[in-house]
Image 1 (tube, helix red, strand yellow):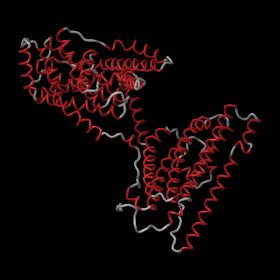
Image 2 (image 1 turned 30 degrees about the horizontal axis):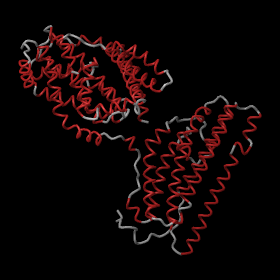
Image 3 (image 1 turned 135 degrees about the vertical axis):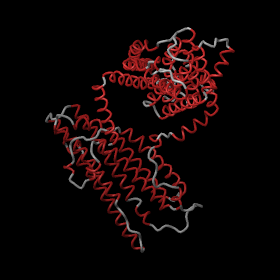
Image 4 (image 1 turned 90 degrees about the vertical axis):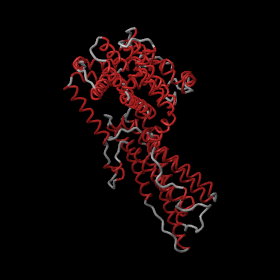
Length: 607
């Protein structure tokens, strides 16, 4: 609910901004293109994940110094540390490199980006890669439309780069209206507050221009014509170095957890390096002067000295942090956890419960109930129903025919169900190894099988969902009613499962009580069998309903095919639910009613 509300607020905010601030439309479109380019890059690189690119990258970055060298040379050639950061995030998200290798590339990129300062300061050159955006998009789309997987992947990469650069170009264009803000001639401030002011100006400039290289080029230009003093130019360079992290952070928004980790590593490197450079600005200025003297650079050649400064403080940051890369990787993995990957954790399973067979069965049943509650969410929403309506005591005919939900069942399974299901399986295997006596072994096996049935039901609902969504909104009233009947039948059997979750047997006080318990269990087993027999009366093929619909031309041939298939799926769902109920709440009943022995199995101590 919160996510939907937040999305609505964001959309409304964007709409108002488009109307109130004309330039914002171009800026936000640029951000959208940049993010889309990131997604395309990741998809493209994934297509090469098992191919030659993975082997090449593995070989080129299998040592830290190699990763560092790749980052430095690539940034020096492409003149964009932001681009290298974005590509590194894409590689990492696609699983082509490790986090350790990625950080090495980022460190190298931070040194390689200083090449721009040297080029501008010495030759006045600046490579404008953004001009290639349009051709890259065109060639990328052409390649993407090909059937060969390799060409599709290359097309995604080219189009991704094109959209990335085009996004930056649009952002620059949108910010052109604000370029007069940077009037360097009217701001010549001295002391720590002056330095801090120009650091902030450098950050803002780089955020707006989306390129520290562009900011450095501007700083060198205004410094060369005397519109800013040397000290303020150094502070601007520090700010430009910090501000370039914004592009990587935006790119990380569209990446997986490792992409976010490396973006944080990049951000941390820039912040730490910037703080050190700011605090020790006077000492670094002296070091730059000494280096310039050794290189026979004239004291008044401030542009070259700024290039030296840019290189020196980036190199200093690398020297400080590179030795701790392994520690950084461990901390990032420890503190920035992938909650989706971790999934829902068990509530009841613990090794202490393995001390007795009855307690092992009890916690497995409780955890299975927990699992079913998660599966129930996927089942209900997959059928377009609310959970409350499925469990309501009202008649099934009162169920809303309208499909209220359109959920991603795969996402629910991988983020919420899979981890818990795996934990139940592992615990059950442990319990079976400990209690090999047939009655306990097969009872545990029955619980595991019931869990498998629940997973099968979720997968069946996933297969059923597309046609439920399609035909529940059909203009044909007959097909709408048939699919609503399918939803009702499944909802009815889900209710039965919840009824059986409340099924309890009394603890035996005397020997004769065991006979009563056995009688009760047999009654419930027969009750379930009658439910399963009722499935036949609801089968469209068995009761002749489908033949009548075909004879009357009430539905199309496509609808007939869908109904036959989905009728089979719905019957499979209901049979699995009934079998799970029998395995869980009938077959294990007698065992759970037994008194627990005083002596636990093994040497475990009860928690």
